[in-house]
Amino acid sequence: MRALLCFLFVLFASAAVAQDNPNVRLDDEPVSEVAPAKIEARPATGGAQTREDIMARQRGEEVDTSFRREFGDPDSAAGISNQLGTLGGASDPDLWRALRFDEANITVSAGGDVAKVLVQDGGMAWYQFREGPLTKYGTYLLLGTLGLLVIFFVLRGRIAVDAEMTGRTVQRFNAVERFAHWLLAGSFILLGFTGLFVLLGRQFIAPYLGREFNSTLLTASKFIHNNVSWAFMLALVMVFVFWVIHNLPSRTDLKWFAQFGGIIGKKHPPAKKFNGGQKIIFWSVILLGGSISVSGLSLLFPFELPLFAKTFTALNGFGVNEWLGMAPFPTELSPQEEMQFASAWHAIVSFVLMAIIIAHIYIGSVGMEGAYDAMGSGQVDEAWAHQHHSLWLEEVKAKEKEAPGGATPAE
Image (cartoon, rainbow, N blue to C red):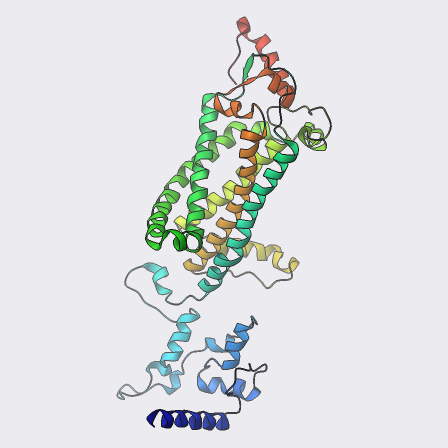
């Protein structure tokens, strides 16, 4: 009997509310249009969020929030001797709206400016991007790259040395160059795996290996990622200094690209110390690796090295947003927003560079006979050098003749 009475009471109360307010419905049908009367009533009600706002947000529509940025009414504040009334004419909802839109006058005793940001709903958009498109398309990119390389290997096979090996070798890279390469390669592999663990751990590791294992793995990954990054940046500078002079574009690159490095035709195109494909790899590593390093530093020191507010200001100044038909990019960002933009950019560029490096690893290992020797022992057979870098081999031979006693000079 009591359950029946409760049901009848809820039913009558709902009917009464629906009769008093025609905009309230008992079904789940969304309200498509905002009632003009409700818009006019917002200032009087302190700008309370409406059901229409909520439904519009769920449909992905843009909601005008400018009217919510005026908080409180000092003229209606209670007198100093009156203990009732709102402080400064602002109610609790006013305060929370001010916090959400970063309009509240916050004073903190510790933590600096970052501690003043108590509500920052932009993190939800970042989280949805991170868990959705970033994870989805980044994974597709890496798996797709691996799949294409497998298909290429099946169709083309390993690129062999056409002529018989001579047994005579020339120095391709000296010890310092090889150290810089392997420091860059090793640190990038560690950074790539630990970064993927942090990004994908919640979705792909925790459900199968448990949350405890995932937590331990991600804690270790964060420590490794933050510290190995310094080795990566050091090696990036070393590689740039050693090889930038050899990776400047030249006319020989055009012929190399025309033959796709020897894939088209029977002859291998001439090349200097680095061919056209290697130059693409080099500049991809330098430019994308440099961008990853800068965004990584911004993540390590978000309050000292804000990156995107200044970048967006410059883009607006050049009119890039107008070229793209977009509204001006935001130029006033909280430290949290700076970290969200930096994190997204850091991951996007890292995925692209990982795909490029996967192709580089393939060519330097199973994809080409004799390629690993260049970075393994540093010595390559003359037959291999003549096939892939004939112009460079001619330069080495010329230096050998010029050297006293015919000794091979150091590279």
